Image (cartoon, rainbow, N blue to C red; front, side, top):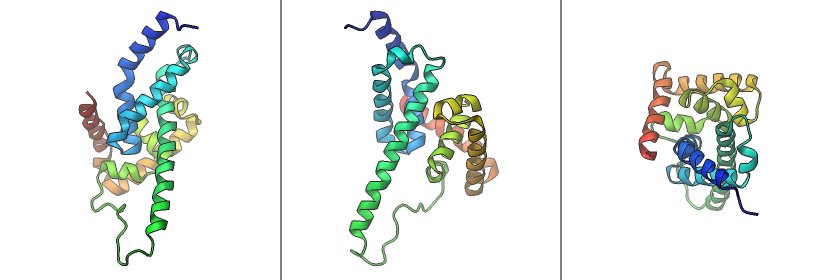
Length: 183
């Protein structure tokens, strides 16, 4: 059965309006500049396959952000498992090696990467994308109370790492930096 022409045009407009934002979100959640565009495209492909349901949702953009967040979480978990396998393989292969994952200088992107996924997602969606607590909760499939606590705890960790004055400005500058990359 062929897809109605209106649905294809509607999805194309949705894609054009939201792809860059979803790519920036993917970058901030994963820290992987190369994979952010792919992750956003994969999320939009998944949305296209369910477009008949997504287009009827109250907030299709929030749904899309949730898909990106879930895909990012899966990729991060896969990367962590792979890193553990590689570490186990190389353990004992050389002595006196330092862990390559420990950053020499903590900047905003590194500090965000150090947060657990849910805290990172809440902080990024609340402060970088200026979403309401309700919208973040809907995107992540959690309660508003969870968003409040995870955002508060995540911001506290970032403030300890970066300093109070630099935290929000740094998060917003990071988003602005990624906006230039994706425009």
